[in-house]
Amino acid sequence: MLSEFQQKQLWEEWLGAETRANYCADLCTHFRRLDDGANWAVLLLSSGAAVSFVTKLPDVGKAIIVAIVAGTSLYSKNLSKISECSDLSFRWNSHALDCQELWNDIYVEDGQQRLRALLRKGAEISKSAHVLPNDQKRMLKWEEHVLRHRVPNYMSPATA
Image (cartoon, rainbow, N blue to C red; front, top):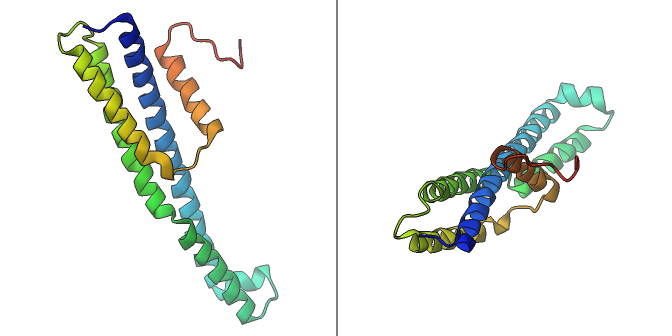
């Protein structure tokens, strides 16, 4: 059975996991769009006809522009970020479901052990996320979303 404090811990862990799952999914979409944009830019810029409309640069200048765009795309490592975000979104979603499962049966005998395991799992997942950017505005957007759906009569600080 979980104490009142432990119930609060579980509730916060659950909401935090849902928030992070949504945040990582949103970042995945963001990096996918960046990668798609870079790929389209390389495709268009590598076509001599498209570049000739944009600039009067000699062929060497055009090649340099294409190389810079392609190099920037490779350097940003969007594909690995997409993979990491997708994996983290899945892991946070799974964690949120585990938290919800315990929340739906907080009087279970092994609740304290299960909560400890969930808190450890959350810390482990967080450790994996340190490679991602900390976009506070994006995170707050998803926190607001989760709170609006999970907390009765929730009022956003922006509207309060």
